[in-house]
Each structure stands twice: as C-alpha cells, then as structure tokens.
Image (cartoon, rainbow, N blue to C red; front, side):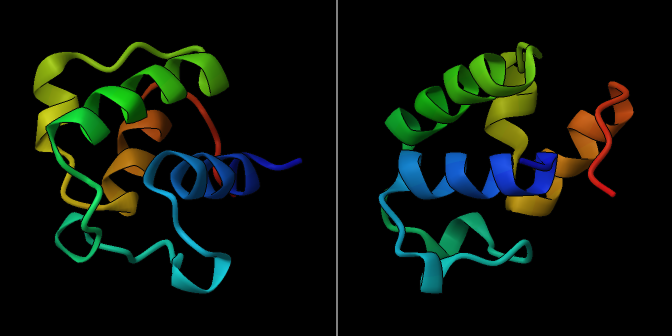
Length: 80
C-alpha cells in the first residue's frame, strides 16, 4: 500500500467518509466530523500510520488533506 493509499484510508476511517467523498484536495471545512476530537484522532492516526508525531500547532493548523501531505513530506515521507 502506498503512502497516498494509507493516508486516504486513514482520513476515511477517522472522519467516517465514504470513498466517494474523499479527494486529496478535500478541505477541512467540507468534513462535518473534522472537529477538535477529529484533530486528535487524526494526529494519533498519523503517528500510528507514518511514525510522525504532529505537534499541536501542526495538527490545529491543518486546513485539508494536502496540508497533511506537505507536513509529512517535509519530514521525509514521500507521497509520489
């Protein structure tokens, strides 16, 4: 499974999204379940899936799926 596929599965699982609702351009504002609890769940999922612990500032600053990719790529995790 590629990192893109892992991230897609993580987002779908954390935010209870149907595969048809997911895109890598998905903004946080379009996901009803992406609230403060969702941010914590996402941070835990990112750590478990990719081995990177998001700082509170990073986690709260995420505006969409692409932001997660940018953060992880800066830490050397490839999404190509």
